[in-house]
Image (cartoon, rainbow, N blue to C red; front, top):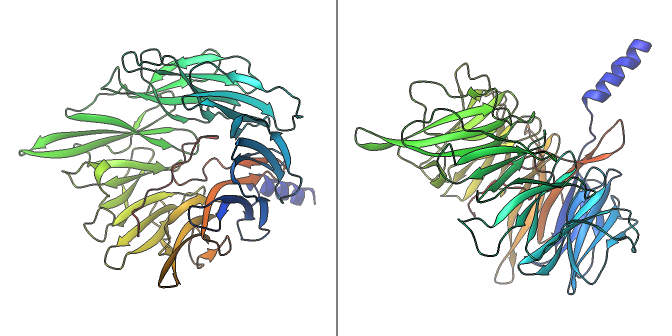
Amino acid sequence: MIRLLAFAGALLTMSACTPGRIIYQHADTLGGQKDLYVVREDGSNRAVLAQSSDEETACGVTTDRRIVFTRQTPSGGDIYVVNEDGTGRAPVRVTPADEACFGVTGNNMVIFGVTVSVTNHDLYSIAVNASPTDIPITISATPLDELPMAIGWNNRVVYAKQDVEVPVDGHRYSYDSINDDGSQPAHLVGVFEEPRYVAITPSHRMIWSRPGPPPNGGLFSTTTDSSPTTAALNTFIHNLGWIEDRFCGLTPNGRLLLTSRGFYPVDGLPTGFASIYLMTDDGGSRTLINPGPRNFNELCMGATDDWVIVGRYPDAMDPTSGGPTSLWSYPTSGAGQPTRLAVAPSNSQFALSFEGITPQGRVLFSTYDAASQQYLHFSVDPDGSRPATVAVGSGGPEVFTLGQVVYSIFIQKPQGNGYQDQFNLGIVPAVGQNPLTVLAGVPVENVASFVYRTDFMTGSAMRCRVCWPHSLVDRGGIPIPSPLPPP
């Protein structure tokens, strides 16, 4: 009996999260004011979180499964918290100022910005259970601009701070970090370097870029603690004809991918090449993923812990200006042959599109038929096994749950002498087999916000780290959905 209990406990630990809950915005008119809803990933237990004549936008979830959101009133933004079933709504910040929530830390601190003017925003934090008389903690408030960038998994807030009004050597902003309680501020990077924020890694390093060729330009990573250190990520030998070192993304276990791109003439024709590297987020333990005497004209798309997904392009094409002709997967070991996952059905730049990798490692892609204006969405394991049709005709994936994909669905319905455009949400297992089911009722417009899960062992909620098709492991930032052409 003891052995059976131990085995059951091991199973619980292995499946550490409950099915996800999806926060989404609902509008009765296209482009109109949006209210806030929550629904389980199987479409059940849909509840209204916030409904009014003003627009509501969710920004995060507390550990006790409450949703924090901003309500944009005519006089400015106010911040509220509400239970996951829509009950118990309470104010967090309701003041005459124009305030907007950015995110919620693991300490249940709400990070929010205050609009002082069009060119001046200040940054604060406050406990989600604060009383109306509590004074917020100042993260940064100067006569110039402060803009939040990300909340690290160690509850440090990374933000951009404007240094000067007139650019000096092209530089205006630096990047700083601070604990969510206002302690241990640190300057990360920025004095005359023109840094550009890229991502936050699970081990608390900020990835940023500096324009120009290496060694002065390229990708860098900086620790976000109170004593920051910086490492260059592109300290390898670059080929002639170099164009850029492009950040690709992070594997689930936090390793970093970049594509070193270039063009050089072959028989008088410009020919593209690319070297794709996998490394730790400090630039160490580097592996060339696509070794060989001539690397193809490829672009890294994303990765699991064991596979890197790349798109191949015609030799004379800039991969940033068209679609791939095929999708391939390379072992992260850098050894072994690549596996072809998909081939574009036509020469259209939209014929084949990579759409993301689910938390369980399924690769999503779509093909587009210009004649019928129809999308076909597919999934496949990175080793090329278990291909499946996931959806037909929908607009593209918006978020992932543990085993499902939430798609946007574009529908045209007859109305009078014309048609009414509608944007809905549908959900389907990432392994296909089931038809796409409508998730969010029959509105005119629904937009997914984020997914959160509840830990079995502690009961605490956690915002999904890889719930967007192109996740940058960014707890508080804006997700980047897969771009698809209009139908």
